[in-house]
Length: 155
Image (cartoon, rainbow, N blue to C red):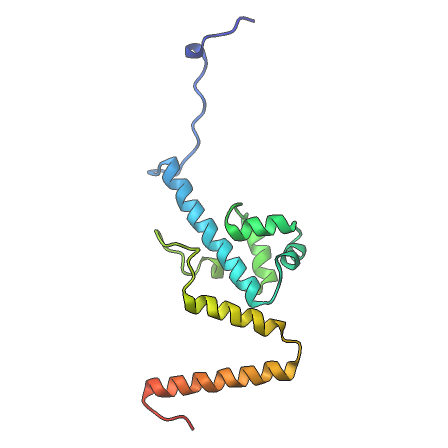
């Protein structure tokens, strides 16, 4: 069979894109959403005191795959996200909370970082009495802050 010149070959199929979107714009949006969902998975995993290895085992993937999910490097199927939500005890919608066009999903505020660190350290405390003491202290400080905002004095 003779080789055809490039001009005689059928043109390569173009990737499908949502109506009104360019491939570049479509992939950028997906990437931002993937990063956001991944960061929310990491946030919840840390809140629960789980390692990436533990989460990976619970959802039946390798540690490397769980890492890629959290970094937003690999997209997560709807079924897998549903499974992750079940393991992390949150609704699927939780992973999309705070997702905005143009926002940097990887940027955590100092307060968010502190909250994650607090949750991580709290989960590492083995002594229940110590955990309860910290919990009581947090409740007391929160009540004091709420009272100060309201202009009242705490009891």
